[in-house]
Amino acid sequence: MADTSDTDDGGHFLQAVNETFDRAARLSDHPHGLLRQIRACNNTLSVSFPLERDDGSVEVIQGWRAQHSNHKTPVKGGVRFAPTVSGDEVRALAALMSYKCAITDVPFGGAKGGVLLDGTRYSQDERERITRRYAFELAQKDYLGPAVDVPAPDYGTGPREMAWILDTYRTLRPDELNGAACVTGKPIAHGGVRGRLEATGLGVCFGLREACSVGEDMESLGLETGLEGKSVVVQGLGNVGYHAARHLRSEGARIVGIAEHDGAIVDESGEGFDVAAVRERMDAGGSVTDHPGATVLEESRKALELDCDILIPAALEAQITGENVDRLRASIVAEAANGPVTAEADAALRDRDVLVVPDLYLNAGGVTASYFEWVKNLTHLRFGRMEKRFQEASARRMMDAVEGLTERTFAPEARARAAEGADEEDLVRSGLEETLVPAYRELRETAREHDTDLRTAGFLMAIDKIATIYRDRGIFP
Ligand code: NAD
Image (cartoon, rainbow, N blue to C red; front, side, top):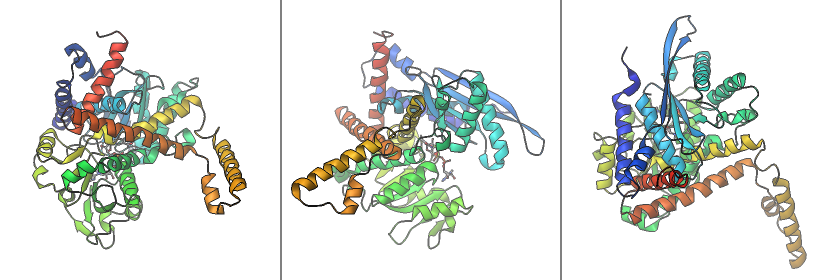
């Protein structure tokens, strides 16, 4: 059997991540040894295990977990189930996680896991056996635990898989008081945090709102400031793509194209799709192409070439390549997926002054909300539980005082709205915004200071932050 640990695609992805790192490192003045340490992947675990299929046959399943950087612990990163996973791919994704956590000040090192499988070929029971065995392998080798390594959902996995990982961990370590913090992205009933499911997509929306609010940048692209009225094409209406599209629509953007694995749809009306309705049909077992009134593109990839203001690849890596980049017509490419633009295409987009909002910043909302979930699990306390009622009572007292002074009364609706204390979802959303808004400003400032693009600037910010930690520990001069 072919060794799938270093497939061409995964290798190219890792090479592209490292090349960007090198480009950013040349703009820094850190010593060579320190830069090499930051760039290196610390550990990769490779596992193979048997799966008994529902029909009694046995298959060998391959998986990986890469821990890129232990400069902060635990390390953190999603687990993906996909037919394209390889050792190099998870190493590339783990490196991105380290840089992503650094630029958003999320206190984790980077990691990533993957299992090589085509999810559509396996029953739910088989997927459960695969997930549990993968979690068992990680736990046995000390690659899973609240203080060590904390997985989360990624492509092809979601809350259900995270609940299986937690349950497996609890079986192995029943006395671990903080066991729930061994994995994030869990269902709420298993210690998940409200708002985690939508967090990556909502973060994409916050990031794009910031990018589109910079008048100077929009003017140079020939666009108006703000999201209102912007035309958007989304590739991949999964967790990230769906929530990003939903929030962008609520901010006034028009979702004019949606690409899925089995076809794409284009909205000719100019109104934009009701993405919730599109997704509902898909969830009920239909195809994106079933949406009434939509123009269908049989070749899904062609949607990337549609005329639009913002193109959001939100599926897998290497979607915008040397082959199709010249046909792209978007002014802004928003990397909701990890690594959707190859190095060659990235260089072409830079030459054309297309604004690329890079993955390591734009999809960091997921790990940010995962950080909140981890904190919630360690404190054993739901966010908002202590202060919600107190805030409500304070707001009511304040309004009573104002009414007493002015002899005017608040309308009942306004009074009810103003007296609403923050619940967990409000606080998670607020924490996300507070993380992503300043991070964009810092990213843009760094890019301007060094006369470079946002991706290189993001790597440079990450290098500086990680270097400071090593230096503060006295490991490097
Ligand atoms: P998902 O599995 O929920 O959704 C992926 C969607 O893409 C699916 O609907 C799938 O059918 C579709 N798709 C697959 N191949 C396609 C193709 N060739 N063309 C169009 N659509 C295609 O995955 P997700 O969690 O949304 O992750 C998507 C991307 O976002 C990945 O790159 C992942 O690493 C990244 N990401 C995810 C998170 C997270 O919190 N889930 C966080 C950060 C980054």
